[in-house]
Length: 253
Image: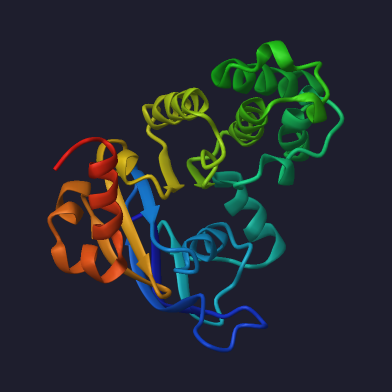
C-alpha cells in the first residue's frame, strides 16, 4: 500500500461537534486512479492535506510506503517532492507574474540549475498543453488555462503521487476532458492519481479505485463496480439518491 492511515483523528480548532477525520483507518493502493467521494464535510479535503504533511494527526499515524511520516522540515521536503497537491481554485497556486515563472518555481526550489529548470518547465508545459502560454501573465488566463498551468506547476516536480481537490468542479465539459486526458497520460507513466469529485458519472467510468468518505471515516475502499452494487454504503452516504437522479437526467430508468 502507498499510504496507510491507522486510527487517524484530526479536528480543526473551531470544530466541536465531530472531528474532520474520526478514527480513520484506510489503506490507499499504489498505481491506481483513485476517486474520493462523499458529502461536503465528510473529510475528503482533510484526508488530502494529510497526504503530504500539511496537516498532522491529533492522534493515530499516517505512513507512506511503509514508513511513518517524518514531520521534521527535511522529511516534509522529501515527502512533498513525491506527493503533490493541486487545490480546487487554481488561483490559490498561481502567484508568479508569468506562466513560465510559476511553473519554474518548483524546480528552482529543488535546487536545479536554470537550464535544468527550463527543461522541466518545457516538459510539463508540453504535457499539459500550455506551452503557448509561457509568456502570458497568470492573471490573464481563462479558468481552464489556469487549471492546466497549476497542474503543470506540480508536474514539473515529477511527483509519484498527484492529489487533486475538485480541480475540475468549475470547468466546462471541454476543460474536464482535457484534464482527464492529462491525468490518464500521467497515470500511464506508473503514477498514482487521487481526485476528489462529486461527479458520479465520472466515478463510474474513470477511476480504477474509489474511496467513500462519510463523517470522517472511509466507509468504502475498492473497485467502482463494487461500490455501485453495495446498497448499504450507497444508501448510508446518500450516493444512491444522487446516482438515481443522474440516471434520470440522462434519460435512464
